[in-house]
Picture: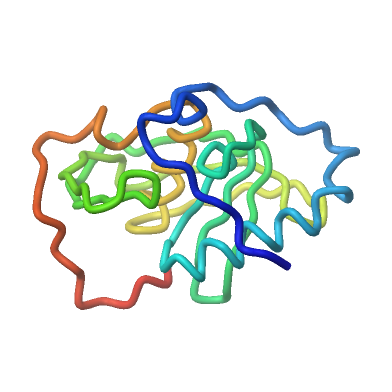
Length: 161
């Protein structure tokens, strides 16, 4: 396994929509997914999208209490009416933070690393991270959605979801 290079703004790949991964290609991505997970953890991230490592494939990894989870071709199919504000940062925008309003609950469909189709109902920080990473896959940065920029308060809570 190896640590991948995380690109930073204004790199054009961060503003480009990633392409879907054919299901039959998932078995070929195992080493790459492991590298993405390792990179996210090494860089103290709680999420990482393909765009951030200059790969335009619809693949994200999210850190959970059970360890990193890969979601391939994630699609948000349901969103709560209620939204909440929270501070966000990004490995591709070092030392930049902002308050972003996101849906409190979402439903996301995706394939897992082993090719299993899943549908997850998520809330809170887990939902926020998925929305942030899916935005990356669509070429959208959190600064596009931020209501105001902040200094980056470190939460007292652990980063695992």
